[in-house]
Length: 64
Image (cartoon, rainbow, N blue to C red; front, top):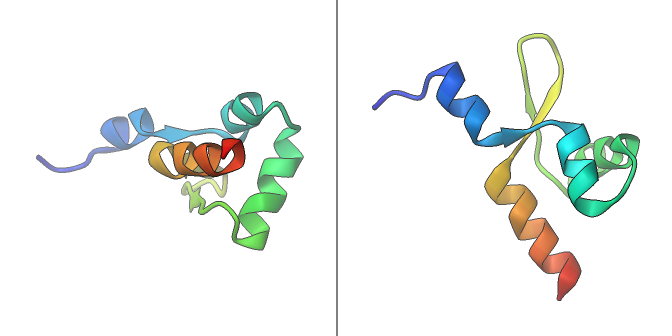
């Protein structure tokens, strides 16, 4: 099954969604992406999206 934009969007999170999970500001999430702590995907419009699996892995590391 090919990955369509609709399918991909179901498995990605916005900076605001990630920020809510970590209880931080979305700008903090952007800094994490810039520093390489969290991988980001750029949309054609230039916005960041984060793979849900990467976010969950980081969340698990932060809680250990």
